[in-house]
Amino acid sequence: MKPAIDIRNLGKQYELNEAAPYVALRDILSQSVKKVFSPAEKKEKFWALRDIDLRIEPGERVGIIGRNGAGKSTLLKIISRITPPTTGEAFIRGRVGSLLEVGTGFHPELTGRENIYLNGSILGLKKAEITRQLDAIIDKFLDYARPDHAELKPVLLNDVIEACLYAVQDQGDMRINLDVSKGLYVLADEVELARVLSNLLENARRYGKTPETGIAMVDIVAKARGDWVLLKVRDHGRGVSPDMLPNLTKPFFRGDTARTAATGAGLGLAIVDKTVQRMGGIFALANTASGGLAAHIKLQRPHQH
Ligand SMILES: Nc1ncnc2c1ncn2[C@@H]1O[C@H](COP(=O)(O)OP(=O)(O)OP(=O)(O)O)[C@@H](O)[C@H]1O
Ligand SMILES: [Mg+2]
Image (tube, helix red, strand yellow):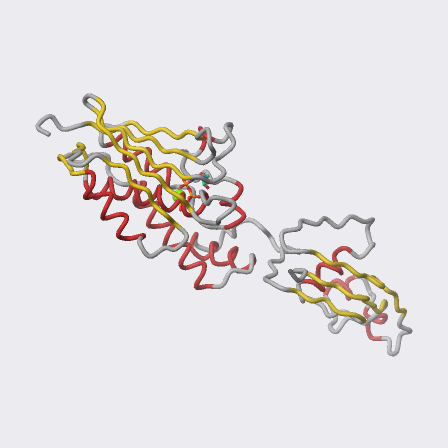
């Protein structure tokens, strides 16, 4: 693979004592106007950077360390295309997001939405990408903030699962293995239950791919146990570290992989947890012995079925 950043023989020369192109009030106040206007001042040149060769491979993280004036910011400005080099070249493959001298927080004079676009564009996202992401976040948030009552009816589990699978059938990076007893009914809201399953399938596809194949293998298993139906959705990915497990259902919590990929809002599992509880059920997450994350859903069984 070609390096993401490829810097060859890079140099940057600056000229000192360059006259300012305008007269600032502070110059007048400090009576240095004469100095500003004085013609043909001798320009001193110095090299801020010289003979820099640097290759950074995709996925590598690099820190640049140096004393004040060593040229760190100059190098970053050249990489971000803020200033051109005097000698040499800097090839950049990919996108550059620069936080050099840019406030990283939220701007109080902008609306929340405007701040999201501002920060997103500083990070190098295109407007359409931010819009897509924002819409997805708002959709998820509305799901999360849904009123607390659910109308429960006997629902044929296989119907709901099939409807969800229909929506993901064309995704080549996901294989689903079903083991659901026929004629199994649960006490649920059909739409809400479908939302739970879709969220879990979305996560399996995002975070639960089998490392060797890059395909998300998902098992959906359901069986009756007394008054309950046990439904399990598991993948064969890397799972999550045990100390992270209890955090996953907290709103806005995202794991490391999710944060670097800038995918979701961290609301999916919070919605799943809340929705299952709202339907009188119990939700739990666990790592499986052979790797991968398993979501366990316990739902009530209607009496007449
Ligand atoms: N199947 C999985 N395998 C490994 N990690 C997972 C899996 N599912 C979720 N996670 C981790 O749990 C975190 C929280 O998941 P959650 O669904 O709540 O948020 P999200 O997918 O990041 O965003 P959203 O669902 O709102 O689009 C994820 O960011 C990810 O780190
Ligand atoms: Mg999710």
